Image 1: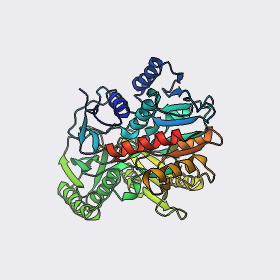
Image 2 (image 1 turned 180 degrees about the vertical axis):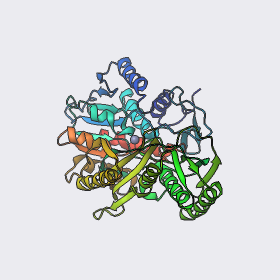
Image 3 (image 1 turned 120 degrees about the horizontal axis):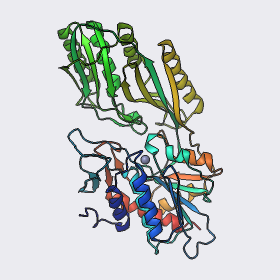
Image 4 (image 1 turned 90 degrees about the vertical axis):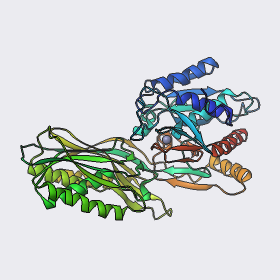
Length: 479
Ligand SMILES: [Zn+2]
């Protein structure tokens, strides 16, 4: 049964609802990619799909726009799959349960994927409606953006003719984003050895945190559950002999983990419980504004694995205690812009190692290198290694941008004020497109969305309506 079919703009919400019925988490994009291809085939539109499931659909210029420059409309097909603790949905197999609350569309118990389904829905709605005037359109839908822009990285962009790109992957209406950070995933691996240890097995959990996006929300001061878990381990280790069995937190490199759990064996259970309880009070004070529901719980556990030996436990706790995390520098050029940061996104242990995966971001290439070096320096001292993946370039500000000027002019007419022109700390695929399409003129926009990458994600209907009108006017004026 359709939930959104009465919402305007009809075309946008119709395609959005259709795509929400198809599971499309990162790395599971074949079905949604094929759905886009079927859309193009049904309408006789030129299109292509590559091995990474990226899709390009061409919309011919409407009458009067034959000589206008091609515009690329771009968004990503994949979404972050996060769900509430009590949600039993299998997001690899089931579609989302859409619902409406006042001005907001959300998905019950899960992320909505308005990031970035709304871009796909808008582009398809434009291609589907012959009454909308526009230049030749290249609708470019990439995959696996959320796990390091893998699709855009792999994509052969040489067939693209457009040199103006409207990216619809931003989350605040009224902001034209014109520059973004570059980044990479830095995987730190610490080899560990294990030895029997007699004591009480305990499970230590830090949860109740808000989590969030490691780019756009790194400046909110929210706690990282894996880092806090490291602090609990440090405190316990000061009060009693402790061995670490395992520790795990977070699911995605680019999400601030909301929960983390460690298995330990301790000599003195009461001392360990007291240390955890004291730290819980301290954390509830430190994070009373950003994460008021932070909890540290200690439970009896069944010990199934041999713990790490004393030396490995100390080195593992050192990784969690001493690795840099969060904001490293703020921009001196643009007030309020985070310049360089990193986020411990995924923490795991295996029988022979601990692995900590960081999402590193910076709009200054040399600072990104400096941060990589800091990780390498510490890991080498601890006997570990760092490997880097998914490196993407920063998208630098273009002083001379016809697209930005047009979009600013249309914005003024429509809203009666100036748009905010912003550089952001999150990565956008615009960086990869700019790298591959020389001279590209690029702006990123989007309707209001809140709490993306969390089960609280919601999309504003009124904002979607205004942004839709805005995009149509920009297209109409592009000749
Ligand atoms: Zn996105």
